[in-house]
Length: 337
Image (cartoon, rainbow, N blue to C red; front, top):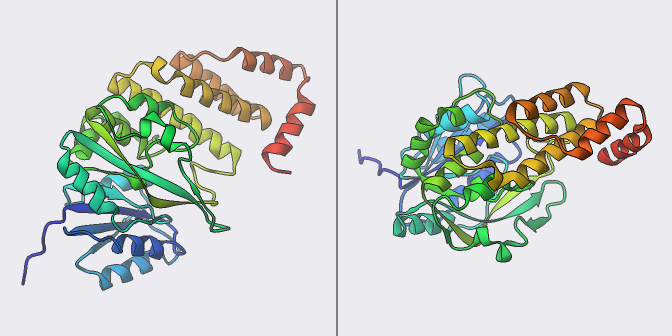
């Protein structure tokens, strides 16, 4: 029997209860046109719908291309990702979430070719589009990309980390457009266990993108290669303000730990810190989350973060009952009532 060729690229596909979209995601990866072999490593984190069956059917139909595994227990996003990374055999790693789709059949070829030509580059990424799951409308992920200095050509090692930590609302580097060297990803995982191997981590990608950007140059290809599906209720984009509060606070904590591990001064991304703390205080006021506000105040004290003067004044006004009407109006707007 002829021995299978070692893949140049491994594509990680994590999925969980995505029976309506996983087939489209896999089809978009299978449509890639490359002169080199690549593998798709699909891992299902104990879905309770038909996602695992669909993935298994694809793996049976494309045995030379797709490797499928079912986790023995629900691992959660962070451990699920890095456990799957350990299974990959390719020199380079790319990601596609089970509810997204790639839109450029030359994505893998363009990124691998760039990494081949530029050994100093540890991470390459591209432009992308939002995809509204309800209407099907596509809108640019980075409408101001042409004027964004962080999205031009090749950015030298270390120059992008502060921007990655400061940006809010949408990712500067969307991990599902990216490609990196497997050896660099594994090195970061082992070197910074506090960023990759602890239970409280809210996401798997920010710390990896920062570690890669600190080690080497980051390249940007202006072509759009991804439709990022939105419209559902995810952890990072939850319609539940309590979940949004908890995720944002954990993300702020992660950013501070990343800065410590990589030696990034806080003043480099102070604007991001201020924006996140203001958002968190805003939610706590609107929803009257006393316990969460106390948690936030303790967090600020422990981390040496200043509580903005505006928030201090609002807390005093709320204690004496002068904010009931404004808060009620803000709550109605927040819930689109």
